[in-house]
Image (cartoon, rainbow, N blue to C red; front, top):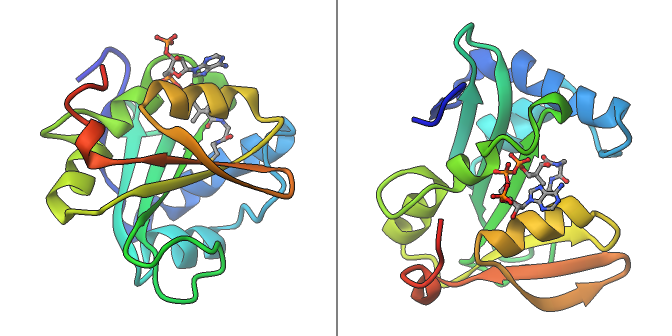
Length: 168
Ligand SMILES: CC(C)(COP(=O)(O)OP(=O)(O)OC[C@H]1O[C@@H](n2cnc3c(N)ncnc32)[C@H](O)[C@@H]1OP(=O)(O)O)[C@@H](O)C(=O)NCCC(=O)NCCS
């Protein structure tokens, strides 16, 4: 795949490396939510609503970032329409803007986008802090568009019918 990283699905043994990515985001002021191994296991790798959790790793196997896709269940705490996807993307600050996020979302046949299409999700929600300019720009570039707001949050949606017109 692209220079400097490869993609693979996360397994439980990746939890420490993924937690290090979250901790680096906390240290750089880009994250305030939990960043422990336990959180990574329960929230991403072993979450029963998980549809996909893709990692980007460098040649040494160091985790550079990951992207999580879950199916929204009835009564989910995010208020996302049940049956939609919920996406989250976390790239280590020193690995940002190298195309990793773009690679994780992927194309028609690989990456998170391929899973969205294969699962037939009617839509995917990305909830982003209104001051998080890089994430707003990233999801826009991936074809997500504004559809709702909450306190301090911009919600963007991606729909499969747009997938043929979005340049990835
Ligand atoms: C937002 C984030 C996921 C982007 O990942 P990334 O690997 O740096 O993104 P990429 O290099 O693949 O960029 C893809 C496109 O997104 C846009 N983009 C990404 N970062 C950007 C930035 N800082 N400023 C402007 N546009 C940006 C660009 O259009 C870019 O394409 P280009 O480089 O060809 O111009 C990453 O910076 C991150 O994890 N941030 C902290 C955590 C977070 O806020 N996550 C999102 C909330 S779930």
